[in-house]
Image (cartoon, rainbow, N blue to C red; front, side, top):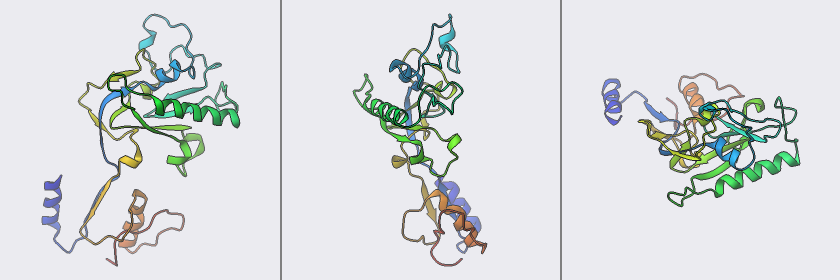
Length: 231
């Protein structure tokens, strides 16, 4: 990538403003957590009797939704089976909902990998803490932030509930940013122009581009230009 950036700079010349940006960093992914398995083992997700081979199925095989309080989809997102929101909700809004979030978060943060004795979850965030401004109907109730070397398993995004809690990642895809703690996974920004003091973020890029080209920044747009001075 350094060579590619150097080639670009050779073609555009010193008078051209160039920004090199990544919106996130990267982590090793060696071990996957079957999040629905954890929820099942701790009584938050209830399965009925399974038919032969059903354990290998995805999309919540044998789940009894009338007795299940939480489930996982995606890369580290946990959803509460909330009454009034879910089709067969089992958890009341308010105090019961809040207590459930706290219990799940504490439990996951306390877990250790028996092979290493190390914690594999850095932190469990509540949805609004990391998805500020997102539509409520799309926001998870909890978001797991894993330590380096760990991620959700390959079957968790599809609602799989394997027997084992942890499984080795043997795929060539051995690194990822998904479900890593945002506090430990910053992106980078490099520029051929001086940047303003501060801590630039991904939301600053659109205002920066608009300002550079002399286009007014809409009032509703978050962020601010990061290039120091006028183009």
